[in-house]
Amino acid sequence: MLLIRLFSRLPLPVLFIFSDLLYLLAYYLLGYRKKVVRENLIHAFPEKTDRERRAIERAFYRNFTDSLAETIKLLTIGKKELTRRFLSKNPALIFDKVADGEIIIGMCGHFFNWEGHLLSVSSKVQEKCETVYTRVNQPFFENLMQKIRGRMGAALTERKLFQRVFLKKRTEPRLIVLAADQRPSRADIRYRRSFMHRDTTFFEGAEKLAKKFNLTVIYAHTSKPRRGYYEFDYRLLTAPPYTDQQPHSITDAFVSVLEENIREQPALYLWSHNRWKKQANANV
Image 1 (spheres, rainbow, N blue to C red):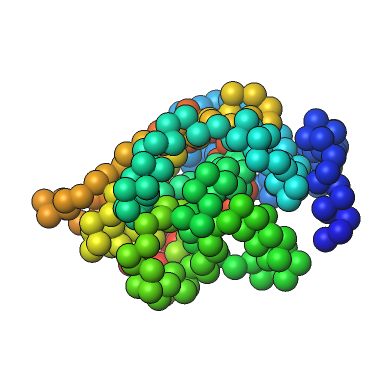
Image 2 (cartoon, rainbow, N blue to C red):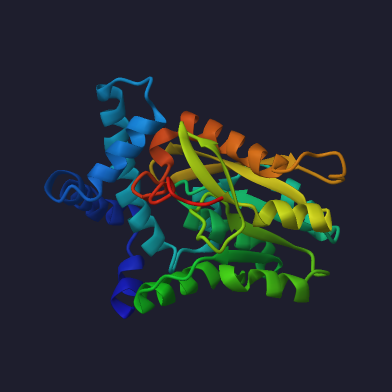
């Protein structure tokens, strides 16, 4: 951990030199998860040519290795640089509502660099930000991610404990950040629908929570204007009352804006994750 902390003290442009080397290693020499990435891109963009998909593929690996360098930097990055590199374009949509005593749900997708986004948001609302996460099995990386995610004051809640924690804190105004595009386990609440041309299951915890407790739901549209800089455009996904809404309406709205974001910024999405593994035989 000490070595990584010292490494994170380097300026980000220097860390990007290591990222360039790692890109060459991961893409050209090792072919890290290239089969998964390629298959995902073929299904997601059947209308594109092989050449166009290869361009997205190479840009994805560039973003992937850059995100590793950026995430290491998050361990020691200053608040001023953090705000400059991870820009929230309309933060009042979140912060004004939290200041007024509301609980807001932020439904997010796995776009680079989601770790920087989480830390940037938590630096503004501090203890009024709760990040729901899935525990990493490797203790070293679990400890590292907890240090990064919690260093600006955000509360960290493991996904399997979230319902219990929410009931204890249901009167506390805050932003609850949920990565809503992860593959559910068989025990989780799930919903099946089409996503990027594939049959896909989704968590519905955010939808059920929002409708039961009349919570506003937002989405952060992600873009990357240049290397090392990201912009997050907060958009209202849905708001109470929900009395006239159909089942799955919030999840459907999330998937719709997620797909739109992916089509606009295809190389920013986490294609190396085997999102559709074993879903063909899932009972929903």
